[in-house]
Amino acid sequence: MNWCTWLIERVPIFVRQSAVLPLMKQGGTVVNAASLTAYEGNEQLMDYSATKGTIVAFTCSLSKSLQIRGIRINSVVPGTIWTPLNPTSFPADQVFQGNLFMSLA
Image (spheres, rainbow, N blue to C red):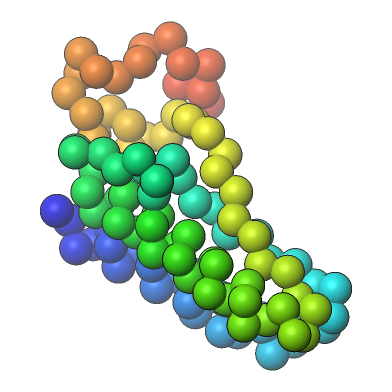
């Protein structure tokens, strides 16, 4: 498990939202990015899965606490995308080479 992933994925969401929430008015919206691994887990990406689970729990709790102010907090799961992290996280035979996003990374 990589503590750096845990730190990089979790800290910015708290810092960003702590800075912006005092400025938001009724009707404002915050959208956080989660991942399927938050719900399904992944034996090779335990740290990443845990951070995305943290984001889901944080989003749910923050949404409940800001409901009285009329501010919506949601999270989305964008689906599988290609990033430079893919080939560094999985063995070569498990990396899908035909992915459309591979040439964009």
